[in-house]
Amino acid sequence: MNFSSKLLENAVGEFTKLPGIGQKTALRLVLHLLDQDREDVDRFSRSMTKLRNEIQHCRVCHNISDYTVCEVCSSHRRDRGTICVVEDTRDVMAIENTNQYSGVYHVLGGLISPMDGVGPTDLQVDSLIERIRDGEVKEVIFALSATMEGDTTVFYLHKKLKDFNINLSTIARGIAFGGELEYVDEITLGRSITTRVPYENSLAR
Ligand SMILES: [Zn+2]
Image 1 (tube, rainbow, N blue to C red):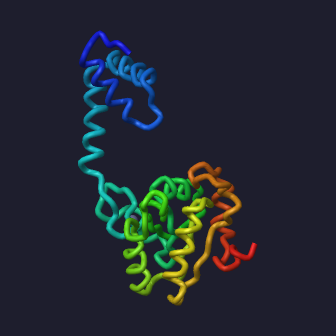
Image 2 (tube, helix red, strand yellow; image 1 turned 90 degrees about the vertical axis):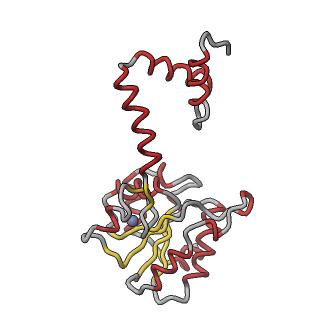
Image 3 (cartoon, helix red, strand yellow; image 1 turned 90 degrees about the horizontal axis):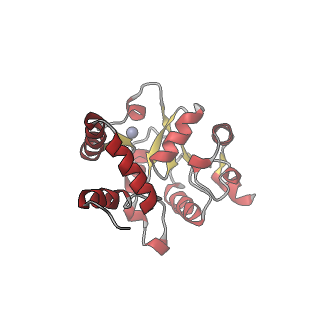
């Protein structure tokens, strides 16, 4: 693509670094921004910078948060005896949208994937075990995608947690047909959480 301006070319170049954005789309977005008021574009870039500089990870559950302890972890309405283990913040959002879950979360920050060189130590596994050692936890629900990585991760966590005196359950795996939780509709996802099954039973299906 031949650009009439180096500034334009640079801006388009930045947008093409985003996932799913090709050069044509990038150019359309940049030209759109050029049509906006300066204040709007300022607000846009300030919001991105602020996000990157100020975002925190909850020190309890590791979810993305504005505070050192997120709103779910600090709410007295949530049941701290139940921890739902998820891959990332999108899963927390999906489950929160169902309004069917009143426990707390633990965000692993990924799934075990030997192919991609991701092992248990790259994930928030130790801090999950710490939380369970603290003694308040009665149930851990695995809500991970029904992919090979999801299964491997659940299997690993189950091995690590089975000797604690807690219930280990999993959401109905059939619902996440190889996709991620964020793509499942709210009713189905909500139902799969309320009708969760003990992990052992999920293997025997
Ligand atoms: Zn939290």
